[in-house]
Image (tube, rainbow, N blue to C red):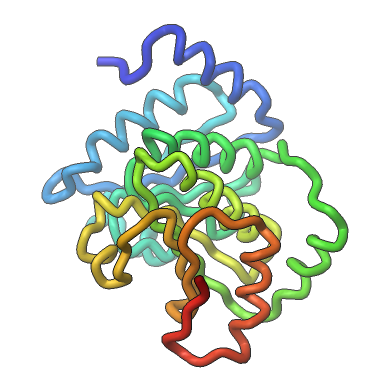
Length: 223
């Protein structure tokens, strides 16, 4: 059974037609004890059928444990987005990128394919100056219209900097993790388990947090 009707399929094809190069979707699943894995697999299979440049590879989280470790995948369902040379830029989706998050998924695919807007030189200079590892977790709700923007900013930072890796995390699929980080509103953005932002913020604010990571102790937060 198709997830998208003919009208939606055509809209998605039009968007994906803007891809420049191939993109590999590395999907980790396990049909047992993973309620969202089947839905996510169907979503990815249908998406990859819409454009030949979108390549889907599926791995079993348990059987293919070495591959999961290679891509730093520690939970499922997980999607890792690789560019045409199979370079891992640290762009991940944990959970089904459905609802409003289809926008961040499509955005990631296009940007990793090479179709992206240029960033101002002052912003690029700040991104290139990042000299520490930065792990960004963006907790989302699929019905949240403001969440895709936060995910896209985090993913763009990961794409542009080899020091950053960024993950969308669906709170409904990973409830214990959301509880661990006290997610009471979305989007909630966690930086290196030390800083957090709640709500929609521009790329400059993300960079401000990263700049302050060096000097601020554990447990601090930014509102």
